[in-house]
Image 1: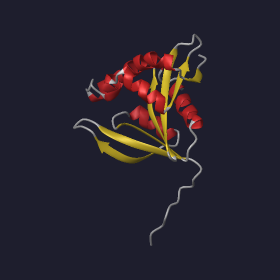
Image 2: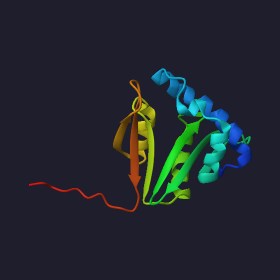
Image 3: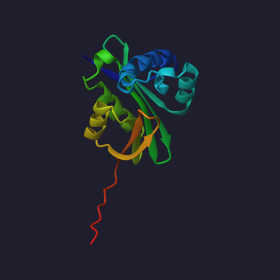
Image 4: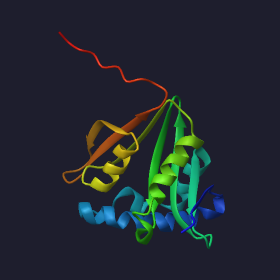
Length: 162
């Protein structure tokens, strides 16, 4: 399957939002919460995000959008949000390709993203790509957000306490 990663256009936002709803149903099932913010996000909010950030789309050989990611530069940090892949295309490297492409499109010394604590596939993917946990935030009785970061161009310093 040939996948192209391109900058999304404003005209793609409705299709990206529909894909987002579809992709997040599996997350909703994990947490038994079908009111997760990505599942109730209105188009107007996505349009506002589009104006502030970088939106990429993954398209297949028929130019159908099968994935998307968005990022928001914030000083030395790029905040990466909503890495989504159509459910029947998951596990084929599209999410990895989206994440690596958004990192290169938004060069910074630090990339940050988050996922839910029960989203084991997401956490493993991010760790495999060099992300490390740095914070957890409990948002409900059933869900804790795991924040992960990837530092670019800086050496990790470890100290040995005596």
